[in-house]
Image (tube, rainbow, N blue to C red):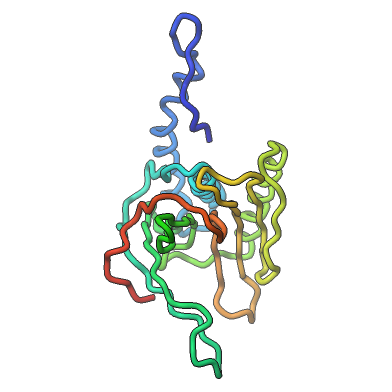
Length: 236
């Protein structure tokens, strides 16, 4: 996705290709909505919509810019309470609980939802993440869809690796699909940024799982807080 400002020729005019790029947000919105109306909650190719949303998340976190919500429905902001991490026999938690500020974006058909999240501020900085998840009422990812999304992620990863700004990053092999990539340099907030695809469809492994994420890794980094931290926590 091209987020760079448009340039002009010697006469101050934009080229035909640049004028066409000006229409891209509108075109993306129309195409995205059309694709969703035909593919959401169905067995069609969901990789087109997923790849668009994943790319928007990845670009936003890697560049430190606002998430491009063109064509998406604003589902509002909330604060999610993360409980403390405890261990049997220990009087104190291993990690304190905290609150995550979240902004959700929906799409027609409710197959996917985008979740922007922000960690509690530390020294005036907040780390952020942007996930593509299944909406609560959406059908689980099938094995065939898992294979399709895996192939799409690998194609996207190969393209990014050829660009020279990304490197291999391998998540722990917990699920049936565990794929990742990492930005070589730190983003404008001084953070390392990783992106990954996690899917679990194997029988007997408990509840099926799907998550695509792009996030700033832990460390003394982050940007100015953007989301609200003053709302009441919502229960999971």
